[in-house]
Length: 352
Image (tube, rainbow, N blue to C red):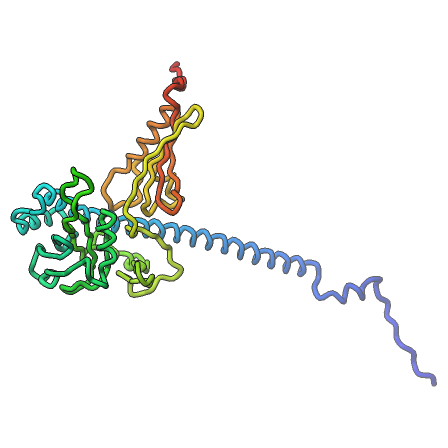
């Protein structure tokens, strides 16, 4: 008997090929839809998260700018007390009668000032209040190797200089504003008399900025400066948690004296006026915003926020325009471009 041959069963044409596929057409489409949905959802989530982070950083930048601006304006207000002292010294030929009473009265108008000092010849001789500041009497500012840099710079430049922060001889940490006083200026450059000084202590000087509110709102912060000699970072105030990926804002006085320049030039049928300074400047993202009505860089500072808005409206009504730009090396420049005086004014809109 012969063995039976192989049993053959009929097959559809192409059934072998179709059976080799891992997935059928409906399953394939389901996987494709699922993968596409995941990709689209991931992209959407990424865009939403990027937008959220952008908005969060923008809000953090606004808060940082407001706090830095508040600190700067507060300190500038306190430093202006030295100009009042200098005016009285010049009027009194180097003497302020009853200095203790006069300085005590001035301190009421400068709540951020911890003390007022007079340093004839660069040596501190009078301090109000004296209690707690006795160690400052006799301090020779021009011959102190650790602190003479700012004092010498102030004397030689004739400008107010802010020094610090540093450890005070009377205890605590603070900084001082020193304004050189010159007598007989009507006869020339004048004779160096000494310094009118205002003392600012920490953390009292930072109270207007209300930095303690930032951690309560979920923000970490650090306020620091670079030492003018060593270049090392000096932390003035910081939250208990260090900032991660921080938004940085630079404000304050540098060792350069504040300088304001006013210039003008003829440009064809227009004239352009520029007012420049060497201060901290205005970030590019705020240069258009500050021209809006009631818009201010700091909501906690004085002012109404209408000055620049009125200035732009006046310039535009005269056929010109106004804008802010950065000056070389930092600082800010306000530019006004107006039609020249020998040009006819723009035609007024006719009323119907």
